Every structure is written in C-alpha cells, then in structure tokens.
Length: 489
Ligand code: ADP
Image (cartoon, rainbow, N blue to C red; front, top):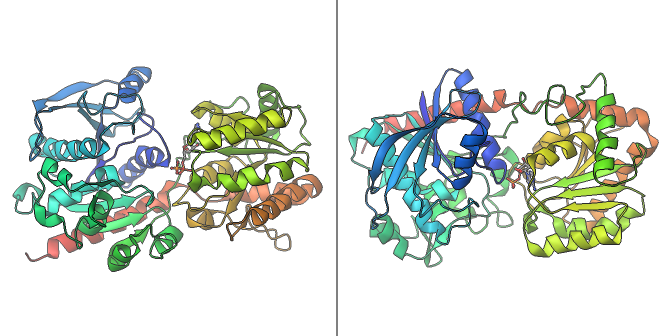
C-alpha cells in the first residue's frame, strides 16, 4: 500500500509530545512490512533548525501557490527532505506567516493555521501526482483532511479509492472555532450541522475527523473504550459511540533501536538485563548532576511530562511532602502551566537536598532520567497511551501509574506470589491511593531486593515494540480500503 501521513509533529524534526514519537517511528515499521510511507508536515521554524542539525538534504519541489478553496492570499511552498537515518520522505509545507514561530502551537490563529496546512497538503499530493491508497491524519490540526476529502473532493477522481484514517492522540484537544472558519476554509455551509462539524454552536475540527474518516483509531485499547463514556468522552462520547464499529484502539510502540539501554548514546553507561551496573552508575552520575546525595540506597523518583492537569500533577504535588518522609529523592522535568511550574519550584526550595525541579524541555536530560531513576511517576487523570511509562519500563525504571488508558494496557501490578507484573498503580483518582502505590514501590525497593530485581526484569522484558502495532495499523488500513472500494455512491 501507498500511505501518506499528515501531522504537525514528527520526531526528530519537531516534537512537543508523544505524537512526534509515534509519527517519527511508525512509518519505519510500516516500511519494514513492505509498504510505501511518506509524511507531510508544516515547515515549522524548529524544523529548519533540525534540518541543519541533522545535516539533511532538502530541496524545493513546488513553487508558491495559494491552497485550493481558501479565502487568503497566503501562499505555500513545498520542500522535501527525509527522516534522519531513514528513507522515509518528508514533505514540508512552508509559509512564514503561519509557521514562523519557534513554538509549534503558538500561532495567534491556530484555526487558520490548521486549515492552511490541510488544504495545502492535499494540493501537494495532487500537484505531485502522488496518488496514495491511505491518507492517515493525526489529531485535530489535521482533522479537516477527511472532511475535505468527503466534501470538496467527493467527486475528484484523483482521490477515488483513497481511504482516510484519523488517529486521536488526545481527545482533550479538539480545535474549536466559530463558524466563520468554514468560509475561510472554503468548506460547504451544510457542514455546520450537528451530524457534521457543529458542536454547541461552534465548529469542532476533531469532530470532523471522527465523523468523516473511513476508520478512526486511538492509541490504546483501554482509551478507545473509555472515550465512549461521559467521564472521558470530552462531550464527544455520543459521536464516538455512533462510530463505534469504525473505532479501534492500537497501542503505540516505541522504537527499540532508538530506545535501547544497551546502545543508547545519550546515556553515559550502557547496560542490559544481565548487567545493571551501568544503570546504577548512571544513577549516581545523575544524583551528582542534580546536586543530590550520591547514594544508591536512596530511591530516586522521576517525573517527565507536560505540566498540565491531565498528568495528575495536583495529586503529585499533594503527596510530595509525604513522599519526603520516606527519605526519597525526586526529580521533575517539564514545562507547562505556570501554576505547576511554581508549585514544583517551591517544593524544590523547600527540600533543596531532595527535590529538583527542572522547568525546561530537554530530551537528553529526559533520557538520563529514564535510565537513571529507580521509580517513574505517572498519576495521569487520563492518558491516551503515554510513552513515559514505556521508556521507563524499557530502561528498568519501575512505573507507578494510575491505571487508565494506555497506562492500564502496559503497566501491571506486581504480584509477589507469582513474581509477575512490572510496576505499581492505583485506580481511583485520589492522592491517598497514589501515595499507597508509591509506598508499595518504595517498600519493595528498600526491603525486597530479590523482588525488586524481578520487577526490573519483568519491566525490561515487557514487549513494547512497534512490530505488533504496525501490523494492527495495516489491518485497519485494509479494512478502510475494503469499505471505500465497496462503496456505492
Ligand atoms: P503527551 O503526548 O501527552 O505529552 P506522552 O507520555 O505520550 O505524553 O509523551 C511525552 C513525550 O514527551 C515523551 O517522549 C517525554 O519524554 C517527552 N517530554 C515531555 N516533556 C518533556 C521535557 N520537558 N523534556 C524532554 N522531553 C519531554
């Protein structure tokens, strides 16, 4: 099959969160299964920087054009490069008005930005004559792709036989705008309808992706069930239930070549399951780097992530005082809501020898934390898939999580009788429950060496590779194609 991905983030060209990792790695695995995959993304400023950093070849392939249907004079140029160390082609839609900021998501008008990209991206396929079987778009910024295909391009023979897949990486971000944006997009007025894009008097781009794509996927089986309920559905649960027979949860994988403690160049001492010495040396190194006591006996706890409500930071900040009673060390790496940045900075001032708050985005430090900590905390309120727990499992750092979404599909409570399980967790979103789960982890770390070794072994042996998930995507693509090609208009 010929497959084209549309995404705002692609690792390592532009990354804010897990979306980048998924779109940066899944294509490589689809290729290994024998399919042709390329990616279209915006030429964000940071992409230009990374092209230089990775010394990538880049060529202009389309001269400036005004994207179809749009009420604008803004023009798009298209460049082509490839993912570092791979032959996956990446098409870059360049426009300095919409993609001029260092931050990917800081555009003053993210609605226009998204529309501009979707329309220019589809034009790119047509202008290049790149007929594909599958168009796979990701998150609300690219959710209008299936809408354009089913509305404006409905009778266009170029897209005949092309199926659209839409993946929800996070239902919490939907792209909600007033109805005027339909005019800017050149989309038909009839879409402002409860069965299409209308959502409480406004337009909801994500809803468009859900309603108009041939198949919808999300990034873990548990999340795909949860989002059909009021608690997790973010007001779209009814639409998701209606599309229930087209909604599939496929767990993200991680790139085992890139995230391998035995070969990872971003950590100082490599290690594997049979010899964890390197892990412990990394730990004392990190303790030194963070000005913490260099002591292997002290549990070192880590948190990495966006500092937003979703990540359960209210619970984490609530229990930090209690955790300190266990004489642990704690490092937090993240940026986000200033409220949380302040709370954790204050906690690090309160416990200068025990708590370190790194309010920054630093993928290398993240890697040292995944490799060096003993315990990784992820008490998320909701978590579509979550990559942090996967990286930490792979590096033998034991996750303590809330069993929700992908966390429930990857972390399993340790059972000392059977010596099975790879972490600890809790279900009810309560600080006391989270504290209990942390206490269990700390207890095993401090008092049960044999069990702790076993938990590390189970963690590092958990299969989180892309191979299985890539095959599941292929099944979904085939089903979508079957539906499209059997359809009678
Ligand atoms: P989400 O996509 O909701 O942000 P995920 O757990 O799926 O959460 O993915 C987050 C990714 O971003 C992980 O690879 C994590 O290591 C990385 N990350 C988040 N915050 C930072 C940070 N401050 N510095 C470096 N990497 C970060």
